Image (cartoon, rainbow, N blue to C red; front, side, top):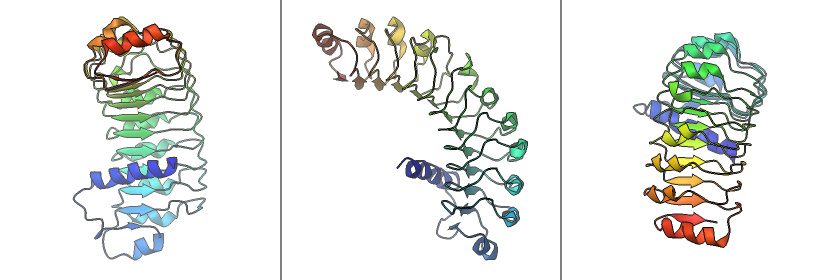
Length: 300
């Protein structure tokens, strides 16, 4: 199901990127020979779940290709021919066995969406900084241990997915990624999130399933934040400046060590959903929270 969802997201992004192209007139090819023999310009190829170990060198002949799906194969490296595809905008290499990204990645300067979920990466190549058109990067379920500093150099990034890695260190100043709207760091090994500065445009933040004890005061200065998930951590208290999260719609604080919440929660007028299940709150506290947040659906 997870693979299907990831593919659907990328496939949707493909047609959003080239919305003016008729998918019936310009189909997604699944066979390299059929693509090469096609009379029309070939923009999209999917070799998903083909069991291939390498990409045909002939793919380099498809100079107008902007969508390439190599998900669910047996690739152990990114073949050099891919780096000759200068028009490529969306590259999906999810669910393979790739351990590193070659320096040549820096040649794909038109890339906007780069997805390498479910591989064996331990770090991200510094040449990714050459790809200043990137909007979305997805490195879910790899073996990365440190937040990739190279991502701080790509100012136009809007979405970063680094969930289900082994990250235990994060740069303190993520605010330099000025356009970032979605950040997923769930299911890592983060225990310190106390001094992190976040981008002002951030709307979605996922930090569930870590070992976080306290949250950064600066997190609560994110006035555009709408969805916050810090469930399944070790958080003991929420700061009073939570009141600054004026745009927050949904907050998941489940399975932490919270005995109470500050009265400033009553000022979160846009908060529709608050999940508190699995915290050591007594009945008196529960009734008090219900009273000060009548507009919020609270799950204890």
